[in-house]
Length: 84
Image (cartoon, rainbow, N blue to C red; front, side, top):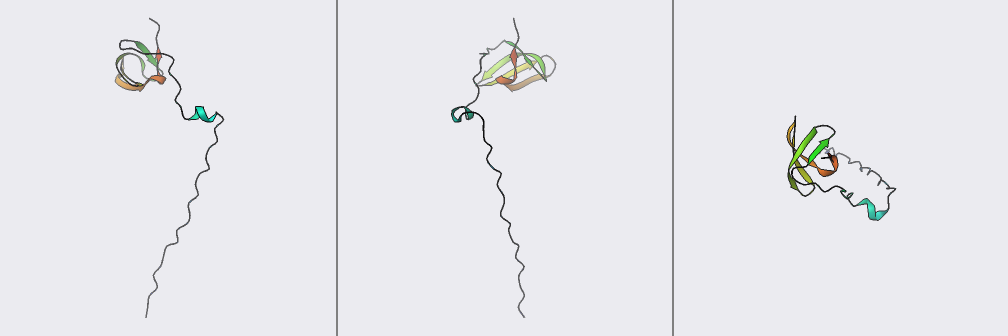
């Protein structure tokens, strides 16, 4: 007697609909321009890590020696330069 193999039916997956952006097409793919140019030695403030000093810059990533949290690598748009 032959035995029947049970086959698993695969259900088609539903894809999430594409989100529509309210911004013009030319703006949606670009990163906001940084208005503040940082230099090594600048004092900056971060909402979670507090104040610190920039020790290195690589592209838009800043290496910051924070006063109470050690050195962290933070994207420049997340910090504010402190007034000298």
